[in-house]
Amino acid sequence: MMEKVRRVLVYLSKENSLPRCVEFVQSITGHFAGCHDDRVMVSCVLEDNKFIVSDREAEDIRKTPVLLRRPSFCPFKHLSVSEAAMLPLDILDRGVDVGVAVLLQSANQKVLLTRRASSLAIFPNVWVPPGGHLELDEKSVFPPMLSRGLPRRHHIVTYLLLQSTQTHLQLQDRLCPEPREVSGCVWVDPSLVRAIVSTVDGAEHSGKAPANLPQTVRVTEVCSDGALLTSELPVSVLLNTAPPEGPDVERVSTGTKYALELWLKAMETGPDSTSTQQ
Image (cartoon, rainbow, N blue to C red; front, side, top):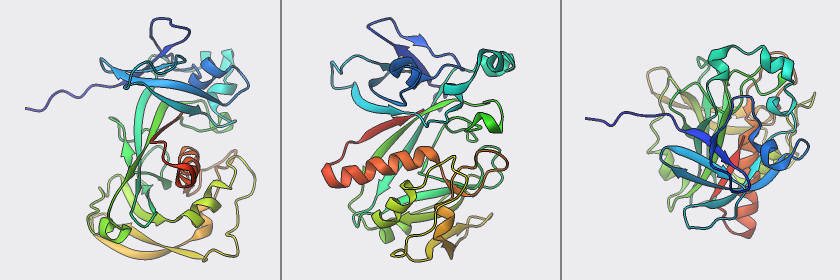
């Protein structure tokens, strides 16, 4: 018999205080970094089904120091008291959930991204690393900007780097994506990743593929019956940015860009296996 699955919520401990469950409307990064800074070093540990984030230096091997980061347009950075009061009670009582995404690096230095299915209510058609949460439709903060509506979901997402000894072609042969969650897969190399992380979410215009990059990239389309088909995707799609308002577009998520940026640095200086994004 399977053990009952339980939600993992975020708790905060600042200046040696007892861990306290985060309120839905609270900015975790802002709690430690202040109103204006968007990044801060913290320690994280999973204890008694609680994901505890603290500003204390890691005192044991379980507590890994990581860089916590939020985008400049994070809704919880700009949410006013009056806007928070407009949220329904079932949203306010949710707390902040934990999601995990894995950067799977092949032996030939490519990383796997997956496209969320178009049928998903939250972030459909957005490219992210494999991962998830107990509630399959949820990831990070949604909507990602206040200009597109008040927040309905709030997660802290931890990105883990997994380095394989197999090439991306060997790993590709073993992929079996769930069509209800994933509509496509793509392996991206460092040159394409550099172009992706150079685009700025919230900008009015999307990026253009640099001249040294091909115009298309090979992707695996996931059919509704689970069959896998090879096709070509314009590289410009992966360079799209999150629009400040209106409908979303197919793009790489903001948190994924952050994780990919750290991956590029790890390739140059040595791996730092964990990072976290609000």
